[in-house]
Image 1 (cartoon, rainbow, N blue to C red):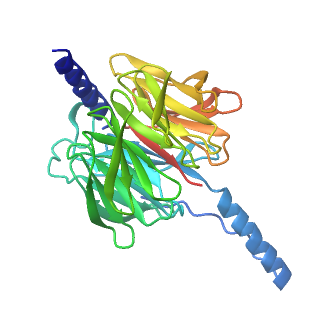
Image 2 (tube, rainbow, N blue to C red):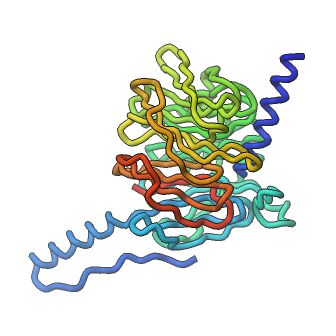
Image 3 (cartoon, rainbow, N blue to C red):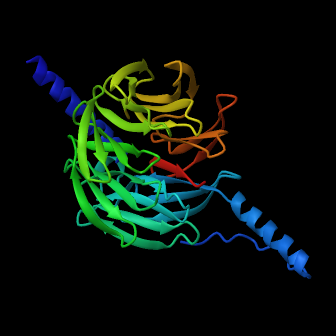
Length: 364
């Protein structure tokens, strides 16, 4: 009976999170023409510097759109409409594409357009420069997260209803392999050497380790109840997983698979490790009826919480900026994004993003 209740609780949590997770261009102004070879060289240098300063972050919005936001002033540059519910989003390593998972309409949470049940589950790819659709790729049922390998060769999509992951070859935008995982695969990250994906299986208490060279599941690591997403340090030594069913972050030593659990806020969803691998940021979502509104900062060296930062209701997606100065958090139950100053450990700005913002990603 106890075992039955535990299975029931895990699948109830899975349902809550999946329900909760469920064109114009912006041209860079050219520098003014100058004369002379030396001046032209200087002009090209200035143009290159100006382009590198243009940075965007993107949110996947469950009501059927992707928001492109300028990081300089936190203003929405473009809203890309999609057919269905945009669930998760990630910028490609070269900064040229934005990939997103799209689920057919998801009902109450406004997930997509009513009456579009015929919309296929897919991954979509848009140009960062022009915002134009580059390609759509059909994947498995209820695609959850999408992550690019660092070498740019693949994009991997978890299919939460199929217990599989689709491997998309980015040269031809086609699914070349489908890999079996644990139950309810959801959020994940890929090692910096592009060799392994660490997939959180929300329907059980494990993380699937997928070898991206053999395209097989190597093993499953038992981490705790209802892991939602994972993170992996750049040295490949430490894995983290947000445990929605335990209000904790699992920290795994990959040399031994030893697991430490650190208490966080209520109903943790996504987790993101900062650029230096020092801190993990855990977004605490709670539920729509009882939303949480915080991010827990975990010191990975000390294996303990370093701070709790107040955000907005239903904190879900989280990412840190490449310069390691900012943290961006989507607040699902109030349609906002919180911008956190890392040094101050507090929210310095909040912007409105309509349509139930879920996943979030930022350009380098």
